[in-house]
Structures are given as C-alpha cells and as structure tokens.
Length: 180
Image (tube, rainbow, N blue to C red):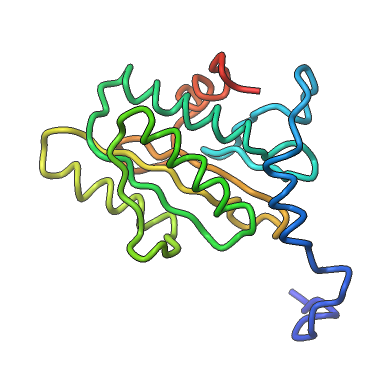
C-alpha cells in the first residue's frame, strides 16, 4: 500500500474543524422530522453523524439515551451503566447529555476517573468483569464515532454481554417513540 502524498506533513487549514462552532451546532441545530438524513440510524452497534449535518445533535443523544434507559428497564438490567468517551469534539457534549438522561432515570453510572477518555474495549471488559460476579447485570455506552472524521460524533450501546448491541436491540433503540 502506497503512502498518502501528505503523510507526515502538517495539517492544512482546510483539514481543520471549528470545534466551538461544531459544539454550538450540537446544541442549536435540530433534526427535521421526516428527513431520513437527520434520523437516528444505527450501524455497527451505534449511531454516527455530525452536528453540522443535523445527524448528531443533542436531540438525538437525549432520545437515544432515554431509549437505552427504557431498554434497560424492560430487560431487567439493574446494575451500573459504564459510560466512556473518546477525544472527538462532539464526544464531551454527548457525554454530558447521556449522563443527564441516565441519572434522571435513576441509573447508576460509572465513568473514567478524572473525566478521562475510555477505549471501547475497556468498557466491554468492565461490563464482563462486573457481570462475572453474578447478581445485577451491567451494560455500557461509548461515545465515539470510532474511525470517522473529527467533525463526526457517535454513540454505541454495549448490553450485558459486553459486545456490540445486535440489530434486534439497536432496532428497538432506533425506533423508540422518543427518537428523531
């Protein structure tokens, strides 16, 4: 595989994102009902999009987190929810939104010490470690668009098995009445 012609070079101005503007768009821009490009749509266990494209905004995350809280209740998941985030610009505001919804629903939440960043496998490991003790089951949420560009945001749900949520579960979350 050949190296990209710009490999090892400083980023160009056109490569940079305006983090303050993107964060503002997360809170201000609203998805349009009926616009498929703005709808919650899960891929490999998660929803990804960008605030500037109206596909990853506070309304999406509040609705997804509420749907997860309801799924937890329906499935009897009463242990803690491990919540992690990465360094993408939209991860911090989405993290705050998720924490607000989960705590409002009485969910015990465990986050990385010192507001740190958490890789997805660490959340999976924490879920499995907790659940190996028996008793109440834990699950987790990871705020990350994974390998997507810096202007994107993402949210993934890991049920008590520690792995990515399957399509049956993500369909329930995606189609919850509270979702965009």
